[in-house]
Image (cartoon, rainbow, N blue to C red; front, side, top):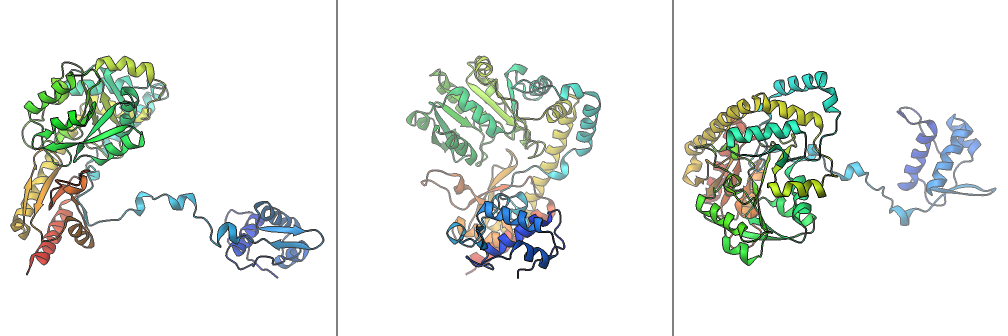
Length: 471
C-alpha cells in the first residue's frame, strides 16, 4: 500500500499534495507503468483522509494522463516514458538567468556601470515624496508618446546651458534605454535603408539592427574616426557614431573629420548620422567636446544620450533629439506608442535637473571619477606592471586602453586573469572583421571599482604577467 506524509504541505490542499506525490513517483519510476493503484476506500483508510480527497487526486492525475482507469478493475499508472523520458521539464523560472546568478569577480574591468555608492538617494527620495504628495494628478495623467513635457523642457534647458545646444522640447523623445529608441528610429527612417555600425564599436547596436531584420554594414575605423571611403563603398545611408568618445578605442573625432561627415550626409536626402554622446559629460581633461549636432545646419544629425552613465544603470531613461523635419513624421507615424518611462521617474528626473541637483551631481561625479582614474594610473605606475604596460586615451571618458607586452594570446590571458578573479576584455573582441585586429590591448572600464579592488586587480595583473614573462 502506498503511504505518504501530510505534514509540512505548506499552502497545498490535501488532494493537491497527494496528486503531487503520486505524480512525482510515476515520473521518477517509483511507481512503474501498469502498476495498479490502491482503491479509493482502502487508500483513504490507510492515509487517514477522506475518500473525496482520493477521488479528486485521481481525477487530476487522469486528466493529465499520469494514470488511467479500467471499469470494475481500478486505477493504473500510465506509461509516460515516451512523453517525459523520466525527467520533468525545467520550470520557466529555472530557464531564465537572473542577475544573482552572474559570476562575481574580485574586480571587473568590463562593467561600465556607474558607482552605486554615489547615487544621490536622499535627494531622489525627497523629490519622490514631494511628487507623490503634491502632484498626484500629473503622475496619473498619460504623457505624450515623446515623454513628459516637463522633462523635455528640463533637458532642453540643460543642453542649452551646458552644451550650447539649441533644442526645442518638441524635438526630444524620451525612452526606456537607447535600445528602445534605436528601434523607433528604424521604424521612423525606414527598414529599407542600409545602416552603418563602427568597427570596432558597441556590439549591442549591431544586435539591435539584426533583431529588427534591417540591412547593416560594419564600417572600419581609422586614426581620426570613421573611414569615409567605407561609407560610400558599403552604400551606408544611416551611420551610428560616437565622435566625442568612441567606444571602445576612446578616440575623439577631430573637427576636420566632423565636417567631412556632415558633407557626406548632405549629399543625399536619405542620409543621416546618429550621434551617440553616451558619456561626453565625463571628459576628464579640458572642456567637453562640442557635439556634432551643434555643427549641423542641414538637419542631418540625430542626437542620442542617456542618464544610465551619469546616474545609474537602472535609471532606464534615455532621449534622442530629432531634426525638426522628422518631428512631425514621428508624431504622424509613431505616436500610437506609449512612452516607456513611468511618469514618476520622468517627473523625478525633471525636478532633479530643473532644481539644479543634476549639475551639482555631475560636478561631484567628475571630481570623483577624476580621482579614481588618477589613483588607478598611480597604482599602475608604482607597480611592477609599468615595465610591461602603457596606456592611451585616458582623458576622454570612463575607460582607457591598456597596452600589455605578453607572450600569450589575448584569449589565454583573459582566462588566466579570470582564474585570479579579474575580468578583463581585449580590444580585439569588439572588431567584427577578422583582419587588422590589434593584439595585447585591453579596454579598462573603472567606473564601478573602488580603490581596494583597483589595488588588488593591479597586483594580480602584475603577478600574472611576471609569471608568464619569466624565462
